Length: 196
Image (cartoon, rainbow, N blue to C red; front, side, top):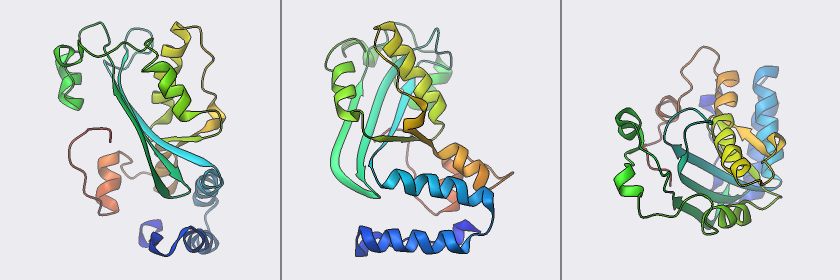
């Protein structure tokens, strides 16, 4: 199982890349090789791991209420982050608040997505060269593109994204692929649902 492999990043990026290459040689299943090679391809560029929180699941009716990003150089954090709360100018259902804890009352004094502090700052942070990595990236991309579309801004193209949910489903067919399940599988402590 891929869960048996661990990449030690303490010896630097070159060594980590060599370890990942060795793991890829050892893994025989094409279902495992493709997403892992896609991830390695992404390592060659600036990577941005990100997440959004929203008021619900409809890109037509719901809005983004938080964006959080961590910039990576390969596997390594650069120290640059981006995090903003966003006023959705609408209510947030109790069942959604139960997931992320963000209420309309808490968000009411934050800027809306069209504020340059949100939209322009986010687009400047991600630039046009970074690979965007998210768990269930299609969900996040759909919401970000809906917000950009409302402002007549160009969309974020699909080829810039790596979806870790898609990767997990291919690497572990039939197994749970939520972030909680993956953290448990890899013995990663996960506290709360906050983005950063």
